Each structure stands twice: as structure tokens, then as C-alpha cells.
Image (tube, rainbow, N blue to C red):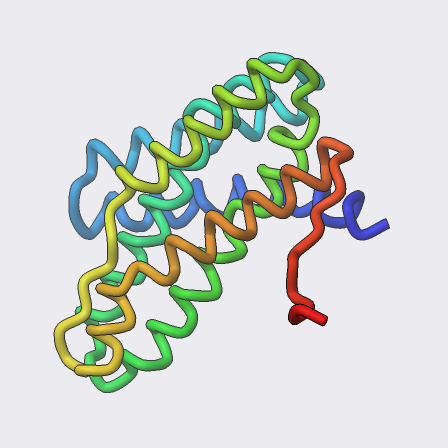
Length: 180
């Protein structure tokens, strides 16, 4: 039930990302943001056209980096507009980044059947997360340290890992009980 609702979020997320990238293209870095806008529109078209294999390949290879880059650039712009609201924008950034890959993980990564492609896709998403730009915050010592600790990246890996492992039919047991 929840999985089908999350799958319906992906087309809207693609359109939202395309709109944000188009708006960002008017402020700075027009070429790269137009490329991200085209990537999102193409992903939306492939998803709606029903070409499942091409959509899945495109969404795995290209879209996660575009999502992350566009959202980081959006929050950089918001932080530059108002430094007074930096804690609020950072919390929104944190939540957005944690949730941004969930629809694509469930829709595309979860449907990979062959173990070698699962491994390659997981390596690819890890590379994307490490290469993605990071938000830089300089006005709050707690926020600066929290951002530099890379806890967000670790939490994104944990969310991805949990969703993918359960989507692939494996059981995930966290050893949370103390020794008895």
C-alpha cells in the first residue's frame, strides 16, 4: 500500500525537480541547471511513456545525481537569500535530502532482479552520493559541525540500504538487543 503511494510520488518529484532546475537556471549556472531540467523531463517522459526498462536505466544512472544537485543548489540559494532563517532552511535541506531518493529507490532500484546489477546499482548510488555537492553553512557553529560530520550522508546510505534490501526480498535484522 505505502509502496504504491510512494511510486505515485516519483512523477511529481520529477516535474518538481525540473521546475526548480528551470528556476535555478535563471539565477546562476544556466547550462547545468537546464541540463538537469532536461534530465528530469526526459525521466518523466520515459516513466509516463511506459518504457519501463529505459526508464529504470535512466533513473538509476542519471536521475539521483540530478536530484541531489538541484536540491543542494536550491538550498544554497535559499541560504544566501536569508541568513536569519538558516536553521530552518538547514532542517528543510536535511529532510529533503533524506527523502529525495526514496521514490526512485523503491520504483527503480527495488525492481532490479539480477544480483550483479543490484551490486552495480548500489555501487553507482554510493558513488553518486559521494560525488554530489554538499551544502556549506558558515553561520552557526552547531549547524556547521553537523553539516561537516556527514551524518546526512550516512543516514541517506542507511535509508537506501534499508529500502533496497527489503525491496529485494531480504530480511533486515538489526542487532538492537543487548546481550542476555
